[in-house]
Picture (cartoon, one colour):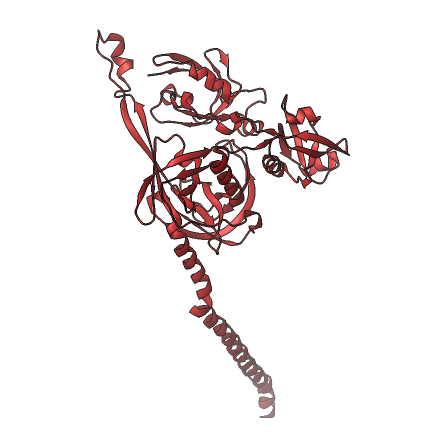
Length: 482
């Protein structure tokens, strides 16, 4: 019996230990459950969520009367029978040529009322080239609008004959923080007064082959932005405009969480100048800047700045002695950290102003006196004119950055095709977006101005030979005007 008892004692001890462990475990679990249940109850308490919910509700209610739906209309001529010339015209035996049909093309977008006397801020691409612009207010009233354009920033003002309108207030886009809550308001796919929420994803500089015009700075957001949102505001939780929505990055044609807005401080400046002057005047230096890489910083002996890649002839930069490989570190007392800083600072200086530009050359600082010029009209208008309208093209300057993005040699000169109107002479000739037009009827195209001049010489019925660069291939296309 003794031996039998002794043989059971280890098992009894084990049982006691297990029982104590289970009891301790239940105690911990109960405590853990109690604490987490408290958290769950607190999280589920509607009173704790109400401030966030109310913030978005207040923003939606506050901005709703300020958001408008914009419809732009343009009448275009398209051939009644595109195949007529190819098959019947050579053998028509006096057959009369069919007259082109006139069709109305429509585009829709958003806008935000920024002054109670009828000024509405939207995107240039929403209303540019339109024969008629119609504005529909939140209360259902409709007005015909007059348009002031600034293609450079992709902003526009639409003026309607109305008074005492509710208007949105501007916020300070320089104080925008990555991660802060924002709301995008507009008319995606024609669905009026739609509110989407998200955060500021980044504040960055962008430029692409599709849009060669330099945007000094844009606000990136994951708030849903879709076709039709263009021109609508991006607002903070106080309902203040911090940006004007203008573009998305997409692989599907719809929102994938990467949208862009033009900062409100830029929009406010553009609006003020358009109202006061009818156009936007920008400062001009005449250099092509580039951001510094870690290798360049070490080689050139600088920590920040914008590297000068090229200096245009007869520009303020050349006259002041700025050279290629200079690193511009300050302009008019303002620090330059990168190429975006340089563009923004220079463009905000009134033409004719004398400023000091500090450059690093051969690892030594040098101060130069520069008289800021005015940004040439050619770079602002971006090739949209009566001459280019008649062939159905929208072109922009071929900058070094864009040439690199298109994989072109630096020696290629010309203008980039940004958009081709469906059914236009350019469309029928086979010209595509991102083609670079280098020659028209034997005349070199080196700028938007020379392109417009060559097109202005063409008359109805003329046929022109267009030389384009498409990737690494040069092609000759035949363009025939109706």
